[in-house]
Image 1 (cartoon, rainbow, N blue to C red):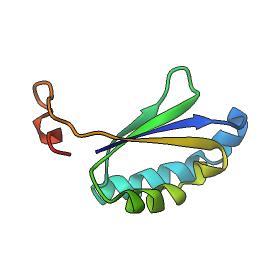
Image 2 (tube, helix red, strand yellow; image 1 turned 30 degrees about the vertical axis):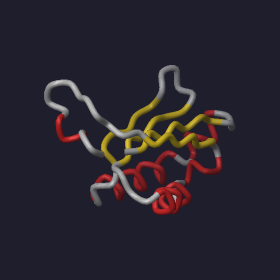
Image 3 (cartoon, rainbow, N blue to C red; image 1 turned 90 degrees about the horizontal axis):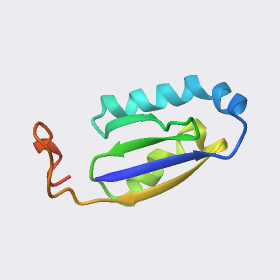
Image 4 (cartoon, helix red, strand yellow; image 1 turned 135 degrees about the vertical axis):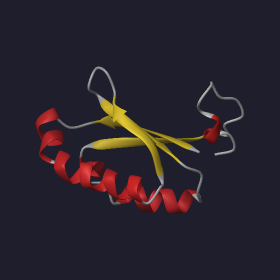
Length: 94
């Protein structure tokens, strides 16, 4: 699985102007089953997306479609989940 950490590099007003498109983009990839979870960082300096395992090139193609590419930097970490808490067994092996 991948952990994608977004960090805003533009003013929050610019981020907000792209929010509707970003949400549409998120919903598309949740519906396709590619995204596991997403949310804002606190304080609001960016966000985090958990992504199922896939080819890195496929993930890069998906991320390039996000309207937030204009206002955020992306840090992608690949993770092999080996241990989970109760109720999160489905994440093992992602």
